[in-house]
Image (tube, rainbow, N blue to C red; front, side, top):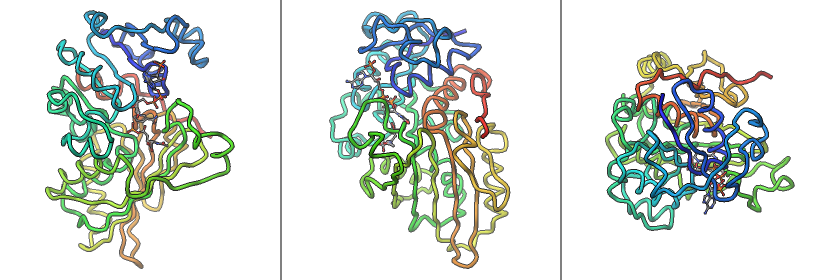
Length: 346
Ligand SMILES: NC(=O)C1=CN([C@@H]2O[C@H](COP(=O)(O)OP(=O)(O)OC[C@H]3O[C@@H](n4cnc5c(N)ncnc54)[C@H](OP(=O)(O)O)[C@@H]3O)[C@@H](O)[C@H]2O)C=CC1
Ligand SMILES: CC(=O)N[C@@H](CCC(=O)OP(=O)(O)O)C(=O)O
């Protein structure tokens, strides 16, 4: 049994962490940190957990309140994670950071895309990128894990193996992703108002989205050369879920069977990546509330393109669920402990 604290526990990601960890057999939650709801019962902040999680939110002093825990989840907004993670790391505690602050290895790239200085370079250097299925050995030995972004998770799980195994030529990679509104978090913003999102579908941040350097970093590592992607995110009027569609010119005439063999070699032993049958394609409802990533493949012989579609729940596989999976790796627990729930259907 380990003791775990959550900072930023009242955000959407913090709430999913709390829900998942409450049911985890190897975990005791030590504290749920909140500035805004300190002193309030957690079940009043999140009514789905009323009478289930009976703790009160407390505002933690990171200098003093950490001696008792084995692991801290940090679910704060970008920028705010750096000072928090720094304090925890210096105390030699394990930490999983859910923000983007420790994902990008080159601090100048981070500063350019996030418009803020990086103030925790020692920790950045030590951080392991937490794409669970790809970096499981590194994660299991890490003190600090940078949990991947939600769009990147949906894109890297299908693309990384194909680039690593030279099954595709990494030119003209076009990625079209759609996300539910919970991806924007709980903090209200004009663009996320019901009246503006409901019955509306929009593209945003084309070519400038902050996940581009994170995706390109990992694809470049896989390919052994610098990769550029064309990435277009969309906001869709649903609460959860990401569907990513990836278009790859099939310059090497790669066969479907070869792609399937590569995926099987990477994911056969991995419980949370599901490869769909031929002519079946992922849908967000099939993964919603679960830690699964579903992947479907099509080779269009008429246009000679490979089209790969993936679906995840942005708050689970794209955040809290992958965080728990990484915790399981770091502490040697069963990989699916706390993560066995499937999506509801319909
Ligand atoms: N939403 C998603 O799908 C995903 C989010 N992430 C990342 O996880 C982290 C948490 O995201 P999410 O839960 O969506 O965010 P939210 O906006 O829902 O929650 C963030 C929480 O951080 C706390 N907080 C502390 N200081 C501040 C501050 N100065 N400004 C705003 N909030 C503050 C707040 O709680 P309180 O006021 O109670 O202290 C707030 O509830 C972010 O870094 C996000 O980018 C990663 C993957 C997916
Ligand atoms: C719909 C929406 O707004 N999505 C967010 C990304 C989700 C997220 O939280 O990003 P991280 O995984 O990096 O934390 C965005 O486009 O900025």
